[in-house]
Length: 251
Length: 270
Image 1 (cartoon, rainbow over the protein chains, first blue to last red):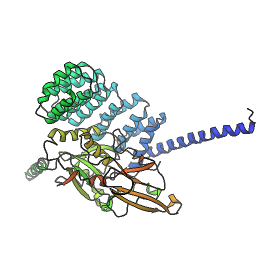
Image 2: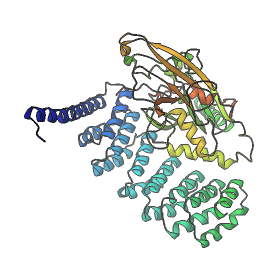
Image 3: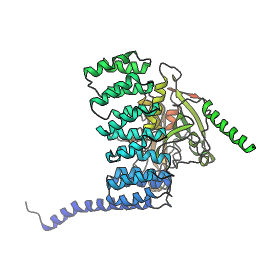
Image 4: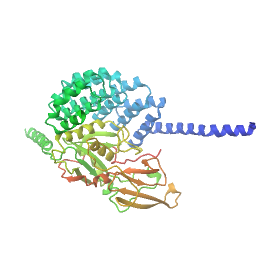
């Protein structure tokens, strides 16, 4: 097939022109969002939306500006929460991002929702390297901090995170936090995890925790015959929610 | 000495307010947007035409949140899913703009201890707390979760109840006919080059999602069969699956505006 040089040129133009336009448009979109996010004169709404776009863009150039926003104590809590989520989404500069999160978390004046967002985002990033930091958070006097740290450790889902959760589960006084720890254990594997869940199902003083242990065990199916037999006494639990859930699993 | 008595009295009253608040955890709270307007409760189901209005900024959708006990709420606003004092549900600046509290609602069978045991009520709080830290659905593409960036205010409330095994608003997409309202809006602004443009907007009364059309054909809304849909707070507020209950907690006057300005926040058109 013979193609004249003019036609070839036209063909090349047809292919590359839209591509170039697309790339330029994407770059312009990125620059626009970067500029909106960095300018503190812009509205809270515009900046949060821009940071969400920057996070989704996955562009390495967004890392430093977003870290700057995150580390700036003068920024509003909502803006910093937006930066946390954007950085967690970005997928670039993981060591700097995690280090930045931990540093901001430790600020004396860090707001509660900023801390919760950081803990949640560490879980989302499956930041196994933050386990020591999260373990410290499990001893925080604020129950909601312990709750979010447990959730994050569950998302990490390693044997080490499960072991740490089990250790703190035994000492935890708040039933809501224990229930979350039990749910978090559902992401880990191993016989010790199942053993702990069954133990919680049969002996935790809170029906909320026992119910969540049952729900979590239900998600771990197929369960061994030993585990199923061990769960059987829960069919007589005083809580109808626990009885119903266990019955559903054992049937 | 008087000062000490005053402080002690204030502290006692504070404890009394927390201890004696009868509103149950799990209550769904609702308010209008500015000037007492909430989409669905007005005769005309109008959406802003102008791109300069950033499309959803003037939508007047109202807002929904979840009471979790101890004078605290969790709600989805622009900053994400956040836990805060109940008085921040309608911040002082929004109240000045004419935002009106609509009330609190609970499932119709919430006082049945067999259906709603204490642990099931606590499960609502637990699930809500798990969502704290997640982002707002700025493009309204999912609205009801489950991941970060997937929640609007009303979608968050619906999700929490759904996870606890209770459907407040059945999933469905309202386009026309019974079960809702339709309204033909004539758009005329720079988006239509100042020409009349007919769009059909709807309000679902029995299912979650209402179809709407807009001359910008813009980014936002949940797609279903080539149409765009929104889940409006007032749709959930109207459901017969819930009943109104008395609100005896502070829901206004907080300083934390949250920047959300209600549920469907002003979104930049990208």
